[in-house]
Length: 553
Ligand SMILES: Cc1cc2nc3c(=O)[nH]c(=O)nc-3n(C[C@H](O)[C@H](O)[C@H](O)COP(=O)(O)OP(=O)(O)OC[C@H]3O[C@@H](n4cnc5c(N)ncnc54)[C@H](O)[C@@H]3O)c2cc1C
Image (cartoon, rainbow, N blue to C red; front, side, top):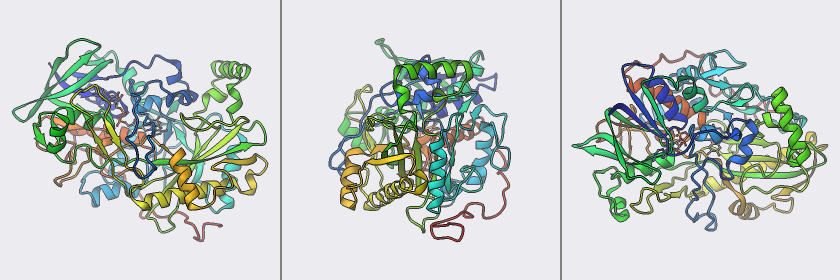
């Protein structure tokens, strides 16, 4: 028996384990289905290139996507200590201030406005460079500037500015729009995962137990209260771990609804169909799945302008040496450290497209690799109207879930995705890129019509790995948790991870999830929320737009 059982040692779970075990009078057990982060690839920034290709993940796919010609997409989700923060591209972005203000004002999630959550972003971070209204240092999470950019990154910045997209030195600061270097979850040229940042420094706390290879198969509910979880370890019979105070689910936007459903908490009709005895009819569990779908342009370079050639043996050896001796070079690059935000819809309330400049081709699984060095610009539409689902394939807790992001079911999303792809392509065609680019290879210059680009998208689009929303917070009948993250209708049970977002944020999702873990920990401990950060007025909509005076294009 322990006080708190946390299920899932991902981005949020590690934060919770650290913060809750600060109180020496309570005992905390953190359960993780995956293994330890022993492999060096987890710690080297460039190890990301291996991450979507099998290591540390569940190996899931989507269901056939009805609005994408039936395509099944690979759906990488982490299964390792640190969760997504151990296998992600380390891009540190927070979204737009208006995302959080919408949670508070439109979704009824009191306490989650931008100024209120900003205090938690700041508590988490140990920023290498910025200290201002938006940033801080001294927190657990290393946040650093890229170490190994290449001249082609500057070409990208110049090209974007030629199109009227401004340069932005901090997309997490006063303005989100513009291109620039991202900051990365790294410290001293090593990945700063939630496990490295929040768990490693406190492993010796006697009141904290971390169990890897421990799959929670069911939340045990007695008389309307969660009293523990059933755990399967290896081939052994399931054991039960009781929680005196609370069970905290932090299994991610796919894993958390899956675990609730396996436990009989979810839409009664689906549970019946799946053969799981229902104990609490909660229709919203597993609904409201949102994700960022990614389209990309790949060009072949005129020379060795990216890191593609590092794959050659002698270059790999030199890169390894460079990293070991100097903490520099290709291995210190996450390969996606340059990017930015802009508008597909000039009237959107805030930027609705995100770009990533990939310093190579074929970096992620399923993405084509050029024979000669290539460069990639990814674009993702940030505020999809589409909603998908996570469902059970059956009653076996070890079976893969049915993940249906339902991409492009809303034609608006398809339209905006294609508009974003066109902007990415336009950036590559600017004068500043000319010395670096031989020719666009994908989609290919001959693919010009919307129909061509739709077909291209159906064949090549990929997830940006940002599922959220499947246990969304709110007060209505379809909300799964209330804004204090308690599961509606069950005592002693909260969900604290990316799944609670009512609407997806306009960026990558790791930093927002770490913020959720920080804020959740204060809620669970019964502490007062941090005071909201005071900012000047109108910070959110001060930026440039297509066609605005500040925009040159
Ligand atoms: C390949 C990839 C690249 C990404 N790139 C970026 C990026 O560059 N920047 C960014 O901001 N975001 C990125 N993300 C997204 C980001 O990492 C996630 O949003 C974040 O990790 C979500 O945190 P979470 O705590 O909700 O879930 P996760 O981090 O996924 O953690 C959930 C954990 O729970 C465990 N678990 C699940 N079910 C059970 C169970 N039944 N029993 C025990 N344990 C269980 C899982 O194994 C996992 O470790 C990326 C994600 C991926 C997968």
